[in-house]
Length: 192
Image (cartoon, rainbow, N blue to C red; front, side):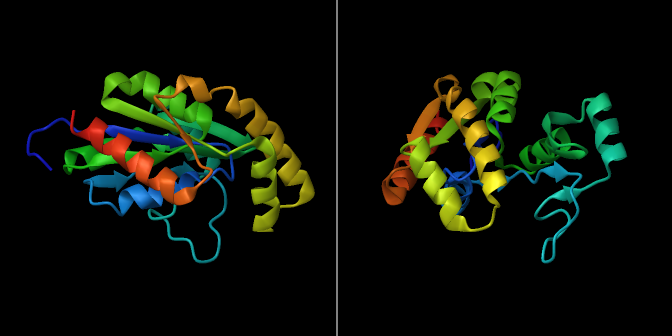
C-alpha cells in the first residue's frame, strides 16, 4: 500500500447464488490491501455468528435512527422489520486505517454506493451463466424452501436488468477463470 494514496472502494453485487461471496473472499485473500466492510442488520444473530465480524446486529429502532441521520451508504428492508445496510462509519474507519474497502451488497445498494463514491469506486456485477443455472445453484444449496427460491428467482430476474449499470460484468461460468479475471480488473483499478 502506498502511504498517502487515496483509498478506493470495490463494490461486488449479484443476484443471490451467483457467487458474490466466493468472489469477495478470493479478492480478500489476494494481498491487495483490502478490508471487508461488515454490514449492519436487524435480524437475529444465528448460532456461531459474531457481532462485528459477521454483521453488526442492531435493533430495528437503532437502524431506523441511523437511516434518518444518514449513517448508511445504502440499506434495504428485505422483509418487514428486517433491514440490512452498509454503515458509512465502517467504510470510513477502514479507509482511515489505510485500506481500500470491499463491500458485498445487493444490486440496488451497489448502484447507490457507486453513485456516492463515483470514480473512487469500482463496481462489479457477478452474473451466473443463465437464470436457469442460478435456479439450479439455489436448489443445490438445499438451504431454502421452494417459496424462498421462487422469491429469490423473481428478484434475480429483476436484478439482472441492472448489470449494464456496473463498471464490470463478471460472468461466473467457470469459477477459476472468473477469480482470475476479477483479480486483474481490481488490480488495474487500484493501481490507477
